[in-house]
Image 1 (cartoon, rainbow, N blue to C red):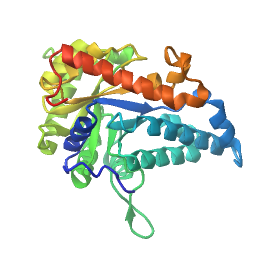
Image 2 (cartoon, one colour):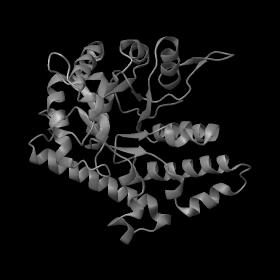
Image 3 (cartoon, rainbow, N blue to C red):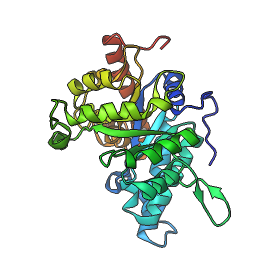
Image 4 (cartoon, helix red, strand yellow):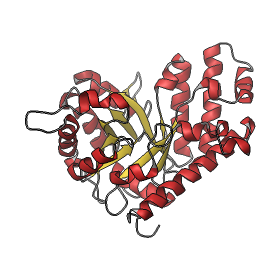
Length: 330
């Protein structure tokens, strides 16, 4: 698969992502979470034509929808984040749409964060890492399979489940975001437990993430081993930014989950770097909610999504300026 981000000069993933953020002057990311019930009817009707199976039609509709979103935002955001669960539920036709979505996004100059949350050890973790970030053996030679730029991973099996991903990142210039303080309300059931020395589990995980990423720190001072830190926990994010001073943050929870632009600011360093903020439903289905539904109907879903992406960018920039963290030159 050809990666179209030709303007990026660095080999390190963190450097490339920060370069892309600078290029767009925007640290926001669009999550591609296709929900068939929310995809406009005209796209589903087109997808049904010539389809031999409902899963095939579903995969086609998803890809049509995603291409419309990508076309609408590719010049606004540095990256997209497809969540694989929304594709896998349609079997191989959904996975096919997932792969083609990655290909299309990269051809449009976007970086791709595969939200797959893989978690295993040994040869199984090696297989996941090879499939999503590296190359796999075939009957002929080695080839890429999914070929995302970054993936999300779950580290609660310890380093055994992380090492294969880090090794693959070193070999192929890719990156990972490791779950730390996630945006869901019940994250506190485990992540907020205290150890004997009074640290929260999420603080212990942060120390490990920081340690694991030291060999992948790029020229811009950040590691390709990053962390997932929810926008819904700004106070915790302040602590985590201090612990993980050279790790990138992927920040979910903005918008539909209740996180605000002000809430995400602690995830950034004093220079306004170190984090990318994701929004999925708020942008994907903007045409169904105010104020965008007043101006755009289902056939203009992409225009509504573009406006929502621009509004998110402005919202975050305004908060960065208010927090005196706006990057120089923006």
